[in-house]
Image 1 (cartoon, rainbow, N blue to C red):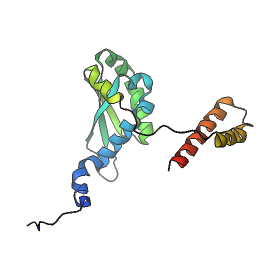
Image 2 (image 1 turned 60 degrees about the vertical axis):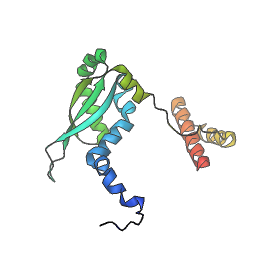
Image 3 (image 1 turned 60 degrees about the horizontal axis):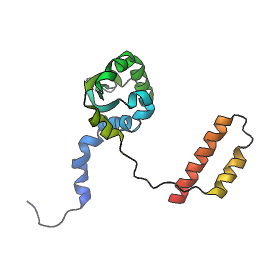
Image 4 (image 1 turned 90 degrees about the horizontal axis):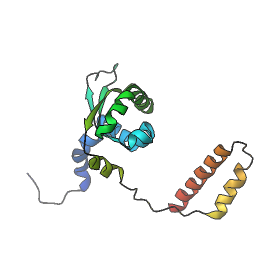
Length: 166
């Protein structure tokens, strides 16, 4: 029986998000978020994760294994199949255990894949603080490896821009 009184939104959240926030959903979310890094630019440009399907292994001693389903542009499928073992290894390395047992490819229209890839982050562009950036450059000036020095400078700039954006 309802009381006719308004309910807090928080009372609806657990039921609305339980499917997304269960273990499978969280793992799939991590894969989708880091897909470009895990798969590499050549695979990520032509394939995108669609779902993660788990089977068996739900005991305390046995971790669940899953099959990752990818949407792939037709002409690129043979190349992904050729490197499937390496892709599974990279996926499992990212997840920290042998979570992915197989990868299944689904041929999809290229525009459906490209729409997912063209989403842009909704963050405001960072404004560079030149004084703090110069201070970071001074701190890293003694690092002999030029690539490492540049990477540390970029990291420092990113941290400063986040701090100033808060």
